Length: 207
Image 1: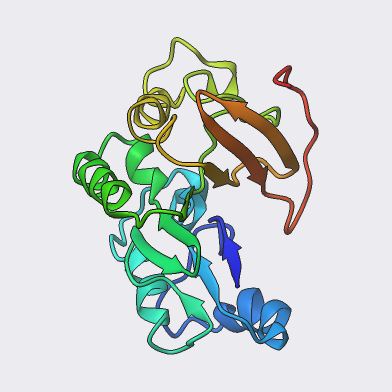
Image 2 (image 1 turned 135 degrees about the horizontal axis):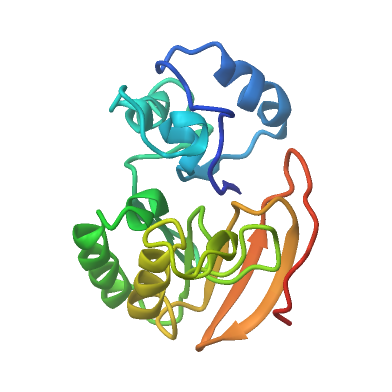
């Protein structure tokens, strides 16, 4: 299987579950591979040219609904969990986390982690990184704006500190358009894999 780590439809998400860009952005590049993809939302998927907000409040729902049209596109909800053999996968909606709208998601994540069968790898995946050497930087200091509330990713950092660090084996994210193995931090391995469409420089100082 594959994972899509958000920002699936630049620049402001899909306009319906029948949007022809599903063909352009997913079916043509990935359909021939024949295996399913587990998919999460990014800020661009929710509108506003990447702001993560839109007058169309159903932006994210269109991608969930598309799961009913294409069995290769797996997004049963805006956040969800699924077991694949020895892997316990937990897909997150980190844009809700970014805007501090993820209390319920955090409680569900705690429940999913507690329910993970023994001898499974616990892997969470979402769009926003905890740490990154890309232009967005580390949560709590996004865009080099440590003193600007919300925009600095303070809620992402808090969520990761509380629900991810030391509680899952691996967290995969996108957002920065490069590939990074950031090794084990706070008891969890972190990987950024956001170079599927374009690339940006590595500017940070994390190992």
